[in-house]
Length: 113
Length: 109
Image (cartoon, chains in turn red, yellow):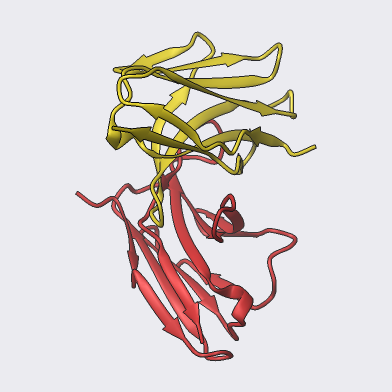
């Protein structure tokens, strides 16, 4: 049974054309994270929600925004994708923000043309 | 110095071999430790948490050495299906999960 679901699995967008990636979870976890992972690199945290509290990483570009309308869903909006934004975007959840495991969705692979 | 360091490998081992990976971390206040497995172009999947007393799950054994600031993963009787990248993850504080860049394992027939 899928616990963290991401849609779409593959997304192709044009340079500068806004795109939205979605994540949903059936775990009822308080925390949801968005990571960006490029080839052969570690996942890089973009931001996270603790319940409804949004927490942005200092080095996350303004081009990246997020929404969490309810416990189950979280969205990543890329307002004007550049070629450098092509990557795998991973959504993760955890029950709390410290001391517990994170569970990842299957990811959305974004291509920018 | 990186906060979490792993030998990138690849470790090429024959089926049935025992292989061990280490991961060092720099923040002595780190609280929780995890091993994840990541297959090519897939998401990280939790393999096991690492407890102070060490823990074992089937062929996999994880150890934590706080004094030397490293964790280890031992895989016994390697299977072809164990071929993957193994990510070390260190929880250094509230929501701070620091990932290593991973160690690639190839199990050869």
